[in-house]
Image 1 (cartoon, rainbow over the protein chains, first blue to last red):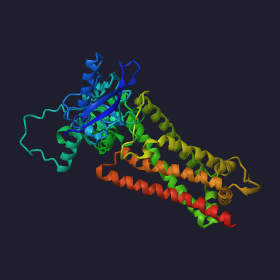
Image 2 (image 1 turned 180 degrees about the vertical axis):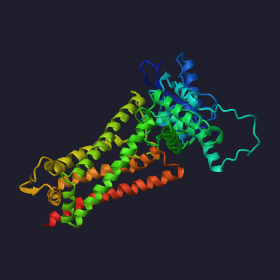
Image 3 (image 1 turned 45 degrees about the vertical axis):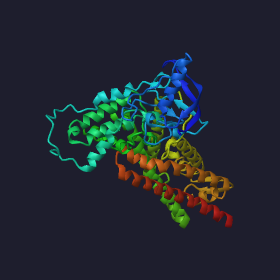
Image 4 (image 1 turned 90 degrees about the vertical axis):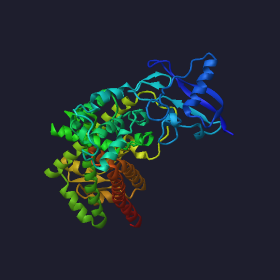
Length: 251
Length: 229
């Protein structure tokens, strides 16, 4: 038989970016421990709709941990208490019967609240637009292994590329720094020969954009790495610093 | 200028000035340990570091290093608070793998500066500063001692248990500050990766502990000596 729990939810409600928000408390009964956290919120929203109340606004899309849309700061952790998963992959079995669960939006000056739990993460798109791409003509699809790349570099580039841009790093950082995100995007290209061509210009443009958008300065607390659902390493931040300092010294 | 305008530039200044201060700590600690073995040898060092031109230049450079480190700490902390925004989390837990020191560097730094003010009032003001003003002897408690008689200063202050405890608290704050500061500086310069991160962290802990023990040794030794006297 499936197990169910009763929970108390404390959810942040805020009507718009300029308005003051506050917590609202909800009681939920008979929530299946097999349901995901977002399914639980769906149940709550259906309940609210049937009571003619405004449903809670939250971001979500693929619900399989790859799109980076879901967010939520749950019980003091970005993407909740489970490790290396996004909120959509968090299950209610991680919570106890009778538990009070506090749900907050990402809180950072660069991620203003749009409504309730949904925040504006456009700043990340702007950073990518500043240089997170390759514009060299790479021709047609090359034969496999025609460009030799070491296994170590390939693995590290792949690990950096696993960043889904959800913003948990910024949400978890006491400095509101986006350096884990930016460094992952710098690293995934800097490690490969195709991305190397524009590496110096890229890191300068992306860091400049990051600073311009008002993200904070990394103090190496490692909270980003600990809360990252994709386990992106702060070794990427060291690589970005190295790339940036070398690029500036060459100028 | 990218060093002053960009986030990484400012962090680089923070880390380079930090490494410079770390080297100074190493020097100061080595100098102190001499006092444990020989008061005369220690006083000879104090003589060398009086109001000579090279000691004054050294002091000025050192003060500059401190100033840069402190000014940038304020700048970066204010910027980071602004980036964080006004709204704080109602529930916030320190994730696994995040050290206490790493999130409290500014507070630890403040304790270090407060300790420094106490230390300056007790030693530097009556030693190098008095010599700059042209004095050769100063009052220390009920006695009158030479400005370069460092051993007498150590004996006098560290016979007081409250002063000893204050110094040990100061060193403890410094220990926390260094365990994070050392590897963090290296990481900011970019000399780290997945393998070296663990190595640097281990080196930081060892270094901070050596510095702590080196400084504490002098305080404890002279306190115990004062009890026997």
